[in-house]
Amino acid sequence: MITLNMVFQRSGATYRAAHVITPQQHHVMRAIERCRTAELGGQVFTCPACQTTRYSYHSCRNRHCPTCQHEAGQTWFTKQQDCLLPVPYFLITFTIPAELRDSARAHQREVYTAMFRASAAALQQLAADPRFLGGQLGMLGVLHTWTRDLRYHPHIHYLVPAVALTPDERVVQPPNADFLLPVRPLAILYRAKLHASFRQYRFAATIPAATWQQPWVVDCRPVGTGETALKYLAPYVFRVALSNNRILAADDTHVMFRYRHSASGAYRTCALPTLVFIQRFLAHILPAGFVKVRYYGLFSPGRRAMLAHMRAQLAVGQDEIPPKDPTVFSSWAHDLARCPQCGTQMQRQILVAWHGRAPPMLKA
Image (cartoon, rainbow, N blue to C red):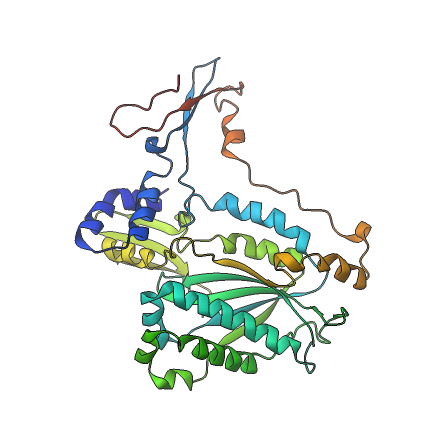
């Protein structure tokens, strides 16, 4: 299988020589290039019966590396099951118009932070309106910056249960299981709050005035029960711009990958010059330390104690709460524990990190 780190190993140095990149982009490129290589050390498994040897090198653990995020999604899924409520869930998506994308690309930390604050505030304000729910929501927000063909398109997804807690601690639900909040006023509130937030930044003067007058898009759709929603969102939370299994071919000049077309649902292929492909990927590297998964309202750490109270009001006893899904991804250690040739328990030794051209060394 062709992986992103193979593309970076082959063409990363050429790209860095031809382009000016940020220190964060340089750091991520080097981490992906070294992922699962002898440079990071690892372990070697040897079969005492037939002498079969297998190497397992350490992963880089960088959050932008597609090789390292698979297990992170499962770990997150297991932890989030404690927050499940027995109600329908909705996925709400906030985007920004094309006129704002240049500003977002140039001022990522400021714009992404403003998007989170404006969208979360708009959701809570509309939900608190007595005409709708009249209470506080629980919201899990995830920032993504890409389209399926790697173009730059910042947007935030919120996973929201169809329930709210009123100021007098009553649990309320929408009368229609397929409807949570009206999207048109939600989009207007979001646009106004983001506009107000941008006024503190100098770059706001470069944004066309018409941007704040045109209709904005907010999407809200039901996604089933809490557990169904979590299973859907778990790999999505830690997904990076491109997974390795989507890369079909790569050489010194081009990279070809597949993606699903949003309108038709059909799979298509996209072939890009290698340096253009790398440039598109690097556009989605987040600022250092930026938190892309955020919890608001009832899901914020200081409010989660109320979830047990809400379950009680929803008439769900502890014995009725479904047990945690024990499904986990098999770890590399389990996969390598048995010899693939004869089934004997293999012996493990540690490999020290290595930076030269000699074979990796065993730790004394």
